[in-house]
Image (tube, rainbow, N blue to C red; front, side, top):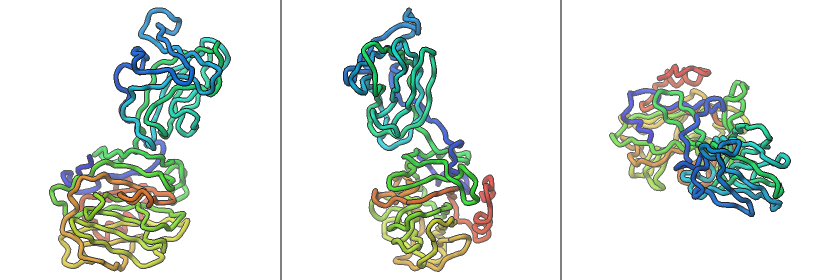
Length: 373
């Protein structure tokens, strides 16, 4: 859970969205099945077979799985006790393999037959550790081969599957889970590996965000590069499906920006048309200050450092929404049809209201190493 309200006032989350800043979470395989010591954790799949052998030479040892591959397509074994594998989430996988007999065979760690949900590797007579990332298309993990024969036998050991997280560059460790976002895009300066590519299914999940002590100030920003001007497609936000929410999004396909801070009653504001343009980078920042004297003092949207004139449907509240609902990045939080399409970089959140001077400095900064805190 991101407990923003209990932290020192300042920057509480910063996501650069660079592939080399990803973090590998804890192993999600339960029990002792990472060394195949427990046959009860695995079952044969599609005419494959599994036996426990000793060490790599077949003698006594900690136990390795020996998979016999048959002529039936995609034969192998299936893990039946895996817990925590979530469809759509990006994972890091590692597997040790050695070919005992037969020719090399391509195998999959992940959903059978879907290359994007697999670590594809070719075991040889040399013991080798294979690693990679995959997006889960199934809640059950398979180790299988697309081709094989009765004479082919492969040893498998040390299978690890771990969630791949996006690194939070602040000390608070708010590392969101990646649901299929590709992190190899150029940023606003054209520098490679500084932004993520979002489409109709990809997003980040930051877990629950706690504003339970009545936080009255909050700011959030992102650099966005839309390729589609959708219908209230969110950059980030959280919602309980009702009027406890905060959202920042592209508005109704006209290039405007809509923002909302609701705490029990609907309250949103939006800019004029044309503030965002297709295939053009823009810096968007929302500021909430519940102590403000007027609606325009309480809620502001800045685009490229400029405070935009807003149209309000109702007065903003005095505190942030207190429901502990998961924060999503790259989609409208409670509508699975409203995904941001394009690239996003440098997502930041502060648990205070930034000043106009700070916002302009943030807009003009580049890889500022948390200058605005």
